[in-house]
Image 1 (cartoon, helix red, strand yellow):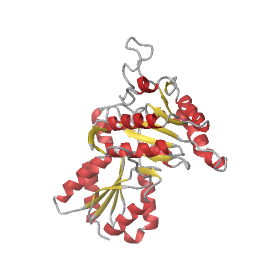
Image 2 (image 1 turned 90 degrees about the vertical axis):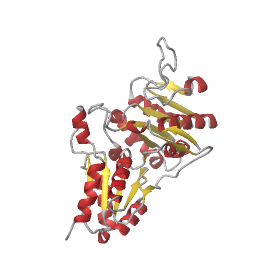
Image 3 (image 1 turned 60 degrees about the horizontal axis):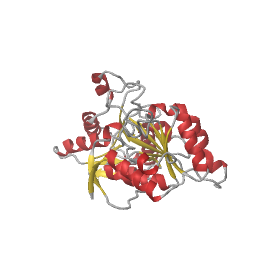
Image 4 (image 1 turned 90 degrees about the horizontal axis):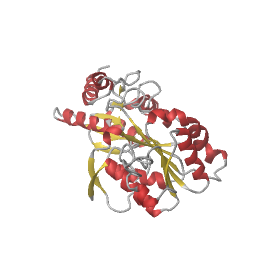
Length: 337
């Protein structure tokens, strides 16, 4: 296995898949980077450094710098997919998904259904999201809950370099539209990545810690916070399951319910605001399908129902963290009827 950062795993996976399949095209704003500048093509390789080397290797017909228009990017990707290509579309920030929402929820998500399964739409929309880098309210949101609610879209969130490779490969090779969420604070984390071909099936959560006292269900950057909380609790003899969902659509309901049946205590950590959120969805799932197993009310550790603040101190207070998750576990275990 090679050790690499998450951003490197994504870059290498795209390289490998484009080399394997000549029908794969990638498009987005500044994904070449440097066009029309003194530095020339690939002077910056995309603002997140994730698409470097693609233009030089595959050329302008397959690596396409687009206008500053999310509706253009996603609409062109959908059209290319209907015409027989496999498209990767990059949205610079998840916050701009509203600009192309019609192309996503009213078009791509419905093609297979409306055409009776006679067509497919293999599009992977790579989308950078999340708070923690002082990027303010219009560049820091976690909109995966909104997109998870749309039938026909698959929603994926890798949290390790290995998962980034395995899930992205599955997304690119699949025949349905996938929203591939990449948390900007995770791009620099390192880990071992399997060599050769490596695919991870959607709908299979990853258990990163195992225990008998409480179930912590989470995704994105909060997986690391949940692991930190579980390790702190373990020092006091409290063992927790920590479940990294990996995908929210499809959702690994069996993993969640089995864990709660075992522990009787559920804590859901979610970076998005609480109303109509992933946390409330999972809480509803467990309340309806595993209510008898619960020994305490479900705890939800979420961001507040506010825009993401710009000030560093306020953004830090806004984000759920390990201390909040740990406190929620202790409240749940202390509950008495």
